[in-house]
Amino acid sequence: MRTIFEKFLKVLIVLGFLFLTITVILFLKYRSIVNVPQNQLETKFTPGEFGQYVNTFIGTGGIYYVCGNNFSGATIPFGMVRLSPDTKSFVGNKTALNTSGYYYPDNSIIGFSHTRLSGTGATDGGHFRVLPMVGGEIASGKRPSMEATFSHRDERAFPGFYAVKFKDSEIQAELTSTQRTGIHRYTFPDNLERHIVIDISSTLGDARHQDGLVCIDRDKGIIEGHIRTFGTFARRYGGAKVYFSANFNQIIKNATIWKDNIPSIDIDTARGSSLMVDIDFGKVDTATSITLKMGISYISIENARQNLKIESLNIPFDSIVN
Image (cartoon, rainbow, N blue to C red; front, side):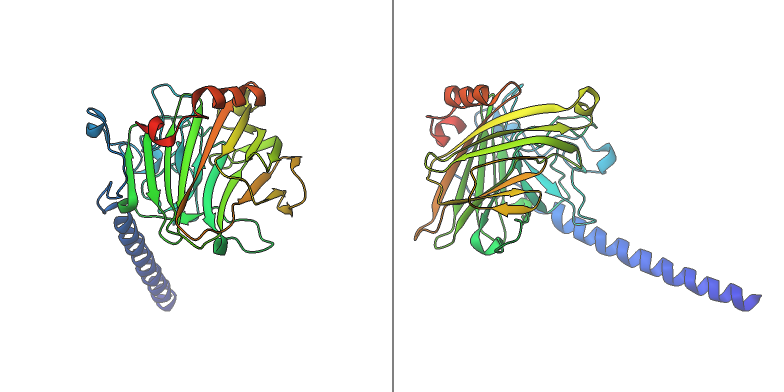
C-alpha cells in the first residue's frame, strides 16, 4: 500500500513540476509581449490637440473574460465602420479573446476587419477581413494563411488612425475611416510580389456565415459582394447581411477566388458560404503603397458603392486622416 502511495506521490510531484514549468514559460511569453514601449512606430501622422491625450489601447488587455472589450483601430464617433486589427493568441490559436477582436496579449494579427461591437461581452462583426502579404508567404496551390506576427513596439495609434509594421514581411499597414468606409494603405518592400487577401466570409470568433457573394472587376480594381453572419446578437434575428464595395488605386494583375478552400483563377464571380480573394499586384523595383477603400452597407451593394463614392473615393488617405 505504501509503495502505491509513493508512486502516486511521485506522479503528483512530476505533474506539479510540469504545470509550474509551463506556467512560468507562458507567463514569461506574456510579459515579453505586453511589456514593450507603445507607439514607437514612426509615421507621418500625429494626433490632434486633444487626441494626443487618448490611449486607444486602454481596455484591450487584462484577463480576457473581464477585459474591457475595447479596440485599438480607426473609427469616428458612432461610426458604422470600426476598422481594426483582429488578433490570435499564442496559446491554442484562439481568436476574439477580446470580443472586439484585438486582444493586447496576442502577438499575431489575422487581418483588419471593418465591423465590431465595443465594450460588450458579445462577439459580433469582423466583416471583410483584409491582410497584406508578400509572394513568399503565399504557397502555390495553398489557401493563404491569414496571420502575421507583430510587436506592440511597432504600432502607432490615436483616435481615427492605426498603423503597424509586421515583423517578417516588413509591410507597414495604415488604417483610417469615415462614417461608412474603411481606408487601408499598405506599404510593401521593394522587389517582392504584393498581395492583398480579403476574407469575404470572415467573422469574429467562430460565428456561422452563409450566403456569400464576390464579384471582381480586374481592370477597374473593384471588388464587391456580401455575406450573412450569425454573431452573438445577429443569430437571434436570422443573421446580419452586410454588403461591401472596395476600390484599389492600382490595376489588379491576377486574382484567385477561394471557394470552400478550392482556388479558381479563371472566374470573376463566386457564391458560397466560404469565400476568400487573393489579389496579386505584381512586383515593383521600389517600395510602394497600395490603397484600398471599402464602403459597407446593411442595405445593398449599390448603397455600399454610394457610401464609398460620397465619403472617401476621391479623397487622399492623408486628407482623411487629417
